[in-house]
Image (cartoon, rainbow, N blue to C red; front, top):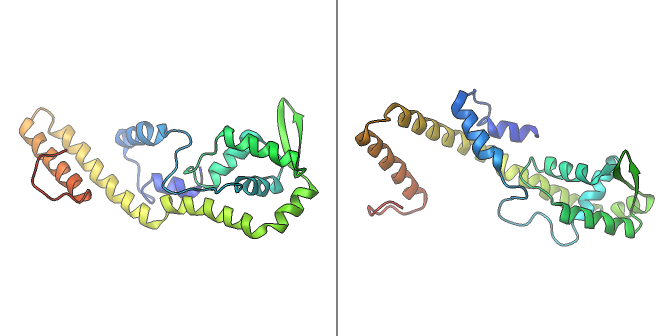
Length: 197
């Protein structure tokens, strides 16, 4: 996990919260579906091959390593699928931009001189693709999101602690629910006094 993602999980450097923290990050963040990403496209048609060539320019990799490296560059907020990475690798091999060989039971891909030349000729586009991957990470782990995360964590922690403290008191729990429902309506822009959703 990249440093920005670790900082995001800690609310920007906050302390440990014991069992509550374990529940949030184990049950919520820990089971994010593979392939999930935020609004907007990361790659346009044909972009993935440039991202892959940039990675292979650093060192040879097998397919799973390529997927891991792409995810790491986006701090975990983009997850490439085998259904996109392996066809792109095969296309690059067909075009002569990469070669592959079996090593210890895994097919390892290496960039060729043709691939290096192709990457150099399209460096602006390759850099733009890399910038978009970085932007995905910044969108979800940058300072504004970290600030919001700290506020969310404080709100969630206090709500959790109050719920545990008031367990067995229906009236107190009802008041707590009203506070949370009111905050939810305001965040949705619905400030009417109607029934909660």
